[in-house]
Length: 257
Ligand SMILES: [Cu+2]
Image 1 (cartoon, helix red, strand yellow):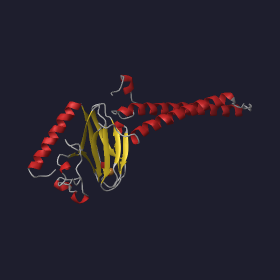
Image 2 (cartoon, helix red, strand yellow; image 1 turned 90 degrees about the horizontal axis):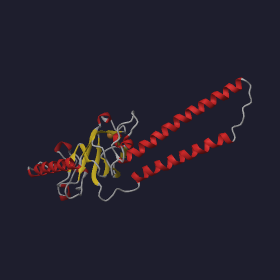
Image 3 (spheres, helix red, strand yellow; image 1 turned 30 degrees about the vertical axis):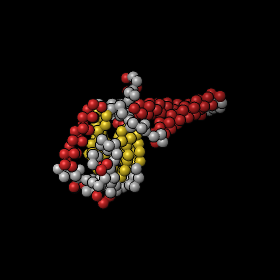
Image 4 (cartoon, helix red, strand yellow; image 1 turned 45 degrees about the vertical axis):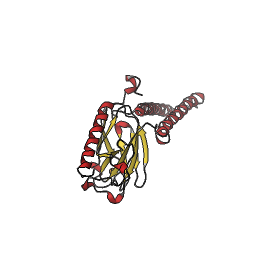
């Protein structure tokens, strides 16, 4: 499902351009929050100034009974609504699983590089073994050549996704904690060694989006960047077919990955 109207594409000028389906609701929530904070800041200072001026004039400060409770109740209601809306947005990503048709991509953080693995035609990731990890030999994820499911796995350092299709990312880390962050997709999740964490989203706006690491993971942390390329579905299909062809050509030549 694509965004319904051009108005829903509006993003605050100082925020990165949003390209994910859930990002529009998240941005609206952020705008509400900022507007409420700005209004409250102004009202609080106006009330403070009034109170100070009255004190100087030795006027009696009247209690704000009903007039004081009503705005407070409205404010509480608004923040409860925002908390529920935010919880729904967060829970939908964290606890409600992706649809069965979501595309599977594995993301692996390694000092200081992001790797992305596609399962290939069999839609199954091949087994990996830590002792087989050898980036110099072209096998940075340690894919086991004895597992046939890994023969068509595609590994790269750029994440390419089709617009309009849900993606289920499986996050792993080889060494330390890395922070997988795509500001343009409003997506952030730590990658932990020894665990596979899932996060799902639907990119809807084609374009290029930077991928960053938000955990200080070592001396090369600042260089741990990659790129997400969201392309139309037809372009993605031809890109994937091209990568598959290259993968099999390398395997046939005995070069492994
Ligand atoms: Cu990192």
